[in-house]
Figure (tube, rainbow, N blue to C red):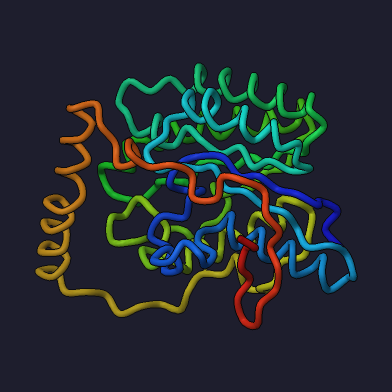
Length: 273
């Protein structure tokens, strides 16, 4: 099936920006599930004799849902794209005082505005944090409530959904970067495939939902050492920034702030500059 969308804008936080995808070392190359999705949609359009997809990615790491809606969404709507991925709230949910009902209200208002513009909307559920350790595991109830709201919002307003919660392969640590919060390259690949399925398209990878082959279990002493390193390297700085009201995205701007064509170029797909 040839993708019907001619233009796609992604808004959100580090999840959509593509943080820690291996391609992210050079932002001239594609990085993250949304960029990979744009590449796939454009390839399929070009193969069918259609114009390449135009794409922008306004996502910035560290952005909470209200800022995504207030700052990024108006710019996205001004571009009048056919498809907008509206994914946010994950950072909010990590906070102990998070209110998933309030987040859902913010999200639904944004969806209503987006659908009124004529654009299709791609939402994404949270991941299931069961077995993800004490820090993320403690958020599971909030994640579940917010994800239930997302499915309801999608039904009410005829949106597409990228189902992270149902992608059990994400329970594998190899799907995640060293910080255990952001996806690895393999994780972004799986999410791109899940997004294609959520949009009603065939995946490129028929095994996208299958678990990876069983890995050798690390020794207990090595696991303890790695956990301590993670606490010092990733958790402590994150807590410190939160206490200071700071985030890693405070001084950053969108990496792809305008719609440009995504054109096939050998093995890679790049955006025209």
